[in-house]
Amino acid sequence: MREILIRNATIVAMDATHGATPFAGDLLIEDGRITAIGTGLAASSDAQVVDGRGKLVMPGLVNAHTHSSETFLRGRYERMPLEVWLLYAYPLLMNDPIGERLLYLRSLLLAMESLRNGVTTLCDDFFDPPRHDLDRLAAVFRAYDDAGIRANVSSAAMNVHTLDALPFAREVMPEKLQALLDFGPPMTAQAYMDYCRSAFDRLHGTSGRVNFMIAPSAPQRCTPDLMAACMDLAVEKQVPFHTHVLETKTQGVTGPILYGKSLIAYLSDLGLLKRNTTIAHSVWVSDEDIRLMGEAGVSVAHNAASNLKLGAGFAPIRRLLDAGVTIGLGTDGVSSNDTSRIFDVMRVAGLVHSAAGPDYDKWLKAEEILTMATIGGARTAMLEHVTGSLEVGKAADLLVLDLRRYPFTPLNDIARHLVYSENGSSIETVMVAGRIVMQEGRLTTVDEEAVFDEIAELVPAYLAEHAELERRNAIFEPVMAEIHRRSTQMDIFLNRYQGDMT
Image (tube, rainbow, N blue to C red; front, side):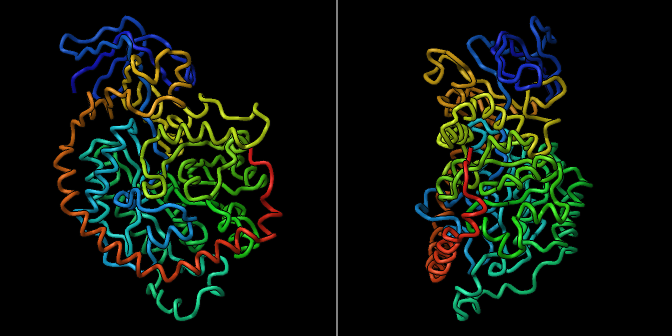
């Protein structure tokens, strides 16, 4: 691979030495890795030299939590809490799985939009019922490999019946509706482990950029033996144990009702809070939950925009940070957020936490949010040794932005401009592992127009089928609405979780 030397740029390295403080310098890339950062660097005679004057070079952004299974459902729903929204985005009554070509295209589209907007690494916890299939997983891997993005990928695992994972469900749902929900024998822990080990053997790391992670959907949706097996394998393979915990008030009461304790305490008692544990959401955590999380060194993927759209609330990020919890930023799926732009999530996170309370010394700083979007996100993905900051030896996953654009004019504080002003429009170049994947507004790895043409041809029929699914599943909406209503009004929830959310 040809050497690349970026000269005389403004660099935001996000490393332990500089953090978000910019400095002027050069950056040398060889064989996909950063080999030197300094001033007056020399390169070989055939190196590609990039003039960095007036340019900002920074690490690529990390999307710490998303779901490619929602890619074709952008802009479809609003004014729905999670439990109601799930009925339509992830129906209880299902058709056959999406065709393999559409499976590939929806993953590719997510990767394309991500790269265009500065995301060089994503963590995709896609949903692919009714079973886990290695060939279908390979189609997702192939899409990300073709796009040139870095990714952690898994298909969410669950083996507890939906009605047994929700409070009040059995008493609220009429028996005639319960009878419609026959999902067959639940998946065993051994069956899922066999699938995971095959994924590691066949797919994990084969491209050098796309890896398999382990994703038990949520503690209430998985049996303890399945979660224990997931954690053992995650530790063995040094990959994340990626799960959803305490996103909504309904999940806030689920732990006390089903287990007599919070879901975080339940995970702790099972020995499932570890460095490998990455928790999506963590909105309705108590002080004791936060203490357990901090002591265990877990990570949280903060989905600020999605949590607001679904009315879930917002996570107590300051308290989590103070406890020692690593924070990354996630978009969640594009049905619960409608964009895969981490720049949007940065801005939302920067604004919403100022409404957490009157003590403005505890409001989040732009530098903290930028850390979450880069090296923090890399830590949640257990890829901090590879990406997330510009350091010698790390992969050249980086962005080049034009500082002579509206978001930076006039220039005051670069971190604040990136969090509150930038939306991706200033990006000129995106590089992953030293390969230029987007330049001057054009993806170099994918024929975007051909992809758009194929999606326009194939997806309308899929959406028509999905509309029929929505009509079939609407019979469950009153039940889910009642579960949501009861959960939000429960005294056990209010007494346990009400308080200052700073």
